[in-house]
Image (cartoon, rainbow, N blue to C red; front, side, top):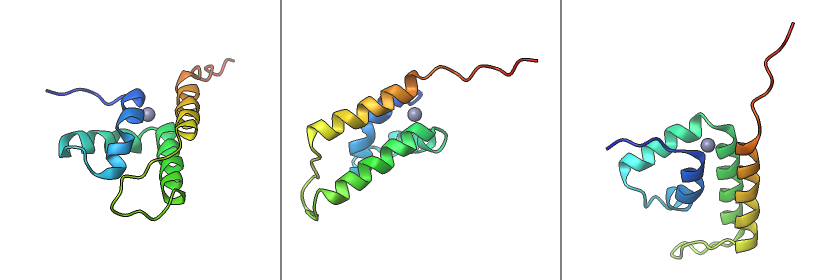
Length: 90
Ligand SMILES: [Zn+2]
């Protein structure tokens, strides 16, 4: 069963990705996607930074404020929704 990871999946899976609680197959597919998708890398970095800032609770799943999570998701959705740059005309 193969399914492509999309940017939308990325948003949903990112928490588990950081947590290392994804199954290996999903993890590597998401990893592939992240390496080829700048907006998602940006999202991941923002998310990680946020997790670090959230505290040093090693044994606890890091919770980021819902408002910030929504802002990050909004940012990513805006990136995804951007139209393709117009082809150069001569
Ligand atoms: Zn993406």
